[in-house]
Amino acid sequence: MAAGSTYTPLAQFTLTSSQASISFSSISSAYTDLVLVCSAKSLNAGTDSFGISVNGVGSGYSRTYLQGDGSSAQSGRQTAQIRIVSDYVMGTSGVQEYGVWTWHFMNYSNTTTYKTVLFRGNNTSNGGGFNVEANVYLHPSTSAISSLTIATMNGPDWAIGSTFALYGIAAA
Image (cartoon, rainbow, N blue to C red; front, side):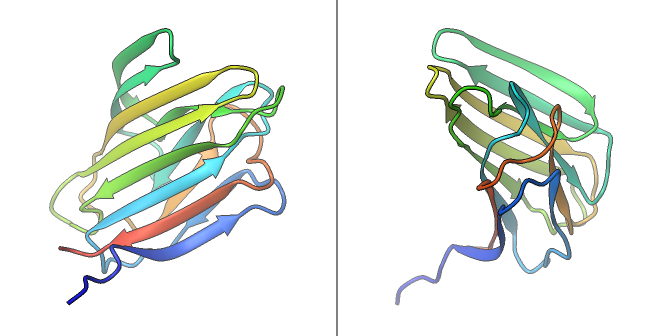
């Protein structure tokens, strides 16, 4: 017997006009994990960062990160963050391309443990820039995740054509 679909589409947005933030609300708790996939760029003239708020919470996030640009790498840890932050979102200066980013919210509907989020992302620009990043986050709440809001951290809006898709993964 063939297995069912692993990723169940829950919601998707493709921007036809620029927007400051994207929100997924009333997220069903029928799945074990969530996966958020974005292909976006900021209207900021330089580089920007993603900022994701979980259930409207604006404090207490932490992350451990590894980043590189092809010639150097850096790693570190940040605590007491206001959002789940992911760097290297390209802005509209020059001929920037849309990057691709994926967040995996593990055990998001569990109400007895803090939430762990894994992130992978990369982008390039026709001007020669290339960046990759991997993070692990901790959201210090035992509440089930019922909403996510994605905004730029430094700039104005998300550019037209940016896409945001949320998927549910059922228990195996």
